[in-house]
Image (cartoon, rainbow over all chains, first blue to last red; front, side, top):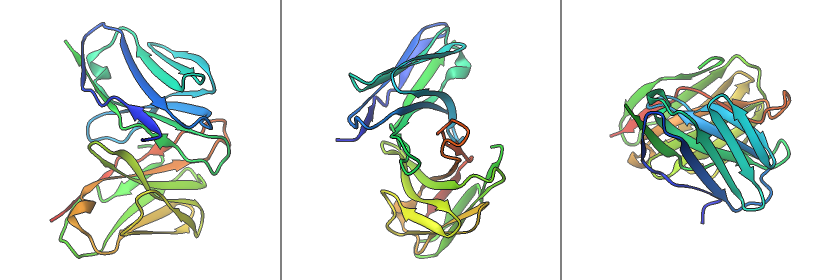
Length: 112
Length: 115
């Protein structure tokens, strides 16, 4: 079993929809949680960063972490065609020696 | 991407030849990483460096070696390329939280094809 599980999609939604992307994980030592966005033929770029449990909002994006369920989510409100990309969750434990563990990514397509 | 450059962007090479990919950063970050990205596997760590001449293996290090003689440069070498090493290779850098953010910054990738 992988440490981080992520539905690969693809997920197709109409413009303006609310999108929910999710990851589950098994390592209870993870404390830092991130979402990366990757456009086709580009490198991943950091989208959201949270520490421990709770919510974080940035414009149309909201990241949620539920450590008790080992479950993290990214919500995109009023989705736009420009949001079409692959979204990767990533997480790490405490300490500088701990490295990021990535999910395999969910491909999102927002249709006009 | 700002502060991190990978070269070459594309390369086609023959089976059995050595190949070196270069990652160059201008951010003075201590940590540098090499990943490969393949469908169904996501990003997998090959090797990483936590300082000049300090490197360690990741989860898929067989057939790869790295060197870091300067803070700004991290080289990935495929000693004898095989078709299974056809992939997209990403370099990433991190200051590991010194500015409160443990996220990595990724380069634009090198698309390598071994024929």
